[in-house]
Length: 530
Image (cartoon, rainbow, N blue to C red):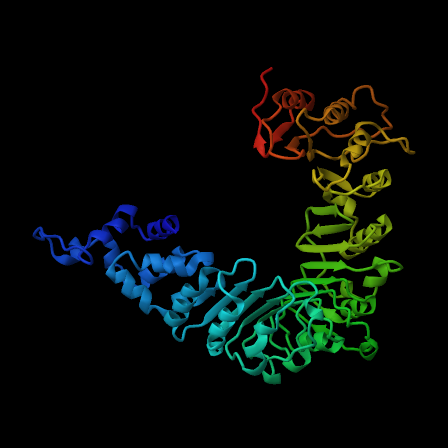
């Protein structure tokens, strides 16, 4: 807290010494010496600040996780600070159960009629659950936000006040239950069955079954629903229709969305502000429905994770979202990441990701072709960053990218505790292919990055660099030789603490790299002397 306060004061031209001098000002111990200057000039500079400026300094110096304790400490600096902080009610509006019952009670008292931002996390709380919710329940009229993270399946006590009373000023509601909590009680209606508060802009529910029908949601900017069993397609579609300024929509594990028969001829839902859309573990009929009726011209991120067995990208996008997103244009590069059974493509400002139990290269190829169609030109014209993380791509994957893309940056990363045998790929990069026509895999790569380096280095990496850099010597003119690396980024991929760099190995990398810039753990190595 001290450092952040000093930084905040420095922003107003007040030094640490000047701030400290306020402790010895007339607030605590009068100076017995005669004043040679009028008081307005002898007071420390911080005492000359207008109250509203000092309040802003205090507000920016407290930490969110210990806001109340920081305020108490700052109020002890001097009498002026104490009076100012105690009388500024909005400073006390962030109430976190992690700060304990005494702090919570003081904050609720000092906040008076200021908006309240309430947090209860069962992992960090320092007070009993019932005590916290009984205390804040009496102030529902001042709630601005409520965030609850539970670790147990018992969540009924959380909603006792919300089931019968209205929180008219609530703007953000996050109720995140433990897995399985959704089965401990049937659906609950909030606010006495009335509609959601008119100011509600963000709603996040996970594993807590709330009756969405009675809320008649509208005017939302963000909606996240996960593992809510008693939910219907109409609940979600109506929430979208009534929230035209929706920016983020996240739907996951909603098994109740099986029946879409009543919406087959549904009109388009216009969401001109939608930027993020994530649809995970949803029934395929509902997934198809959402992709076919949502019109999101500003969409920047689309993530889909479902059981795609028997369903292709072409089927998903034939009459779906692909017809409504802004045409991808004016892009210079794009990225492809394969990781843990899924893949993600980022092109320009648009990101699309799929996750599945078993990644099929044909599924990716269809997505690749779909994006190419949207772009209106071949993706081979654009430099590609290919990122292979904790995956086991077959040789055919690399051959496909060699034919269809221009990979200029290659990243190979494997988690030392849960990763795969990704190092088996490196020898394939060290020699021409046996396919017809003969070529080198990914010949356009100029930036190579990997953590497949251990205590003694990795001889396969040395061999690969050396052979790619010397491939042009005496090669068959009909064979496309690889470009030399311009940059080589290496990192430790073993278990435990990062050891001291193996300089013998790194210097050998520099030698065979023939001028390539080499990095170790993001630090650029000095060139070796000739």
